[in-house]
Image 1 (cartoon, one colour):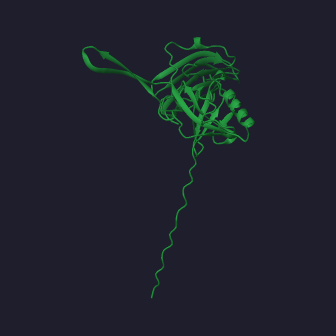
Image 2 (image 1 turned 30 degrees about the horizontal axis):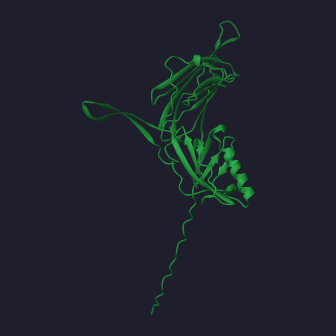
Image 3 (image 1 turned 180 degrees about the vertical axis):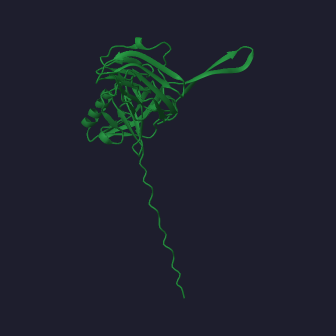
Length: 309
């Protein structure tokens, strides 16, 4: 007769949890990972890294109940990061504290605060240190070889940004046509005007507009950039040789139009220009560069921007 055997119960292993790591990159470019590297750990209680805060604008009328909504904007973002510094000696603790205070000083510029996920993708935000490392010795957060702080940063641009994206375009080959000269053994050579290859679709994976930086390498006579998805366009007329370049930065608050020598070329923009952004999702672009040759190049770089880390 068959013998009944109790089935073996297999307990699956517990999933391994790898938390996201917060990294502060100071204005000099040095990384301060808050995962124990260098004796600094991030504690629980981080705030301000999810949705931004919005300010709404409304009009009131004395004869009408309620309000009329007029618009909304995301305000500057406050970021709170509680940390603990641990060291093997009092001297080491003091050295680490002094180094971190000096590194994040707002007088040195903006820090970049990044959230690195377990799959190594990251989203970052630029922010200036505001407060939190004043210290309160004698309280529970102070010790001989350990100290706790609550770092507060303020980001003027409330949106996170992703990795830089780069797209490049080359020029069409120049068309050459030989026309024979009647009664002679030679030819006329007719060279057609070349154009940068035109239509491209760019996918902005961010939640909000992204602002591209364009760089063109000559030769060329004029450039027209059109975002067919939004209808925005800009044209700049400036003759560039094969050694010239032109950079157009559309970032709000940092917009520039300069040549390779740093000379301002704003006056070369046509009337009604729009330093347009890339809208979320698909953007159908047209690049038209007249007077170009096979050596002409165009490049666009941008960072997608997100509402949350």
